[in-house]
Length: 288
Ligand code: NAP
Figure 1: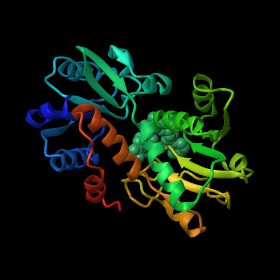
Figure 2 (figure 1 turned 180 degrees about the vertical axis):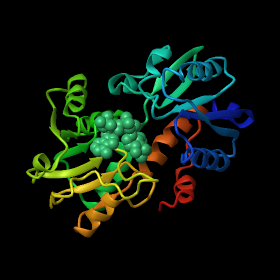
Figure 3 (figure 1 turned 90 degrees about the vertical axis):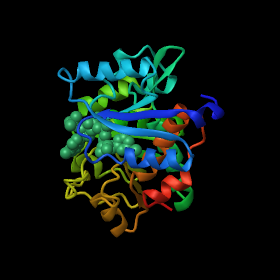
């Protein structure tokens, strides 16, 4: 959409996923709309997992296709399930095999993925602030977010090891992404204890997320590698137990709020054609 058209448009935006009660996305997008002086709404659309949710997701997508909705974000558990319901995928979504953003173009439903790009912007900010250089990265988890993170890190020049509690899931991820660049190991103390050259640990599991803040994805028997920085995709609470443990050990550590803002900003720009007001949104969620 052209910037001039955006001013007179009412943007009907929303998020499809399940459960959604704790989502920060409405606050982020309403703040962005207001700061950009645009009119609109951002609604939560709870869509239960497939098979029972398939008709509600298809109906929402139909509303995007007819132009009634201006755009949708898609989250757990539909980021992969939504793929066959779309007409076209952007290259990022195609490579990652997951979609978090849907919009209409030339009458077609298009899926994109802004998680990888959002993560890269934020990890670069973290690396610059903490003087972290590239090397081996250990990604914990092998679900939808881990796919985006693995693609982002490989493209950014990291050697990537995926550690998952089901090593088959990690192997599957590695095989459909870049088998020649991705190593996989089981997520347990015996396997992670040897990774002395790890520069970055990324938690891409939901462990530690509210309302189960007591969880920590790192095996309790193993010390965190002394050379590592920690990036936790979990953003609620802002300081997870993993981030606390890393900081106690003197390691640089940050939560996933910066990535959340950035992936939302990229969605906002796609839907509205306007630059996202990042400083206002970052302030609104408590980031500098
Ligand atoms: P997902 O597709 O459900 O994948 C979760 C992964 O974590 C799977 O590999 C799962 O293994 C593993 N896992 C779950 N519980 C575990 C446990 N107790 N111990 C070890 N591994 C466990 O979820 P996702 O979409 O990847 O999201 C993961 C997290 O990232 C969520 O907390 C989400 O909120 C966060 N996220 C943040 C952002 C951001 O912008 N900051 C963006 C995307 C996602 P199993 O398959 O064996 O359960």
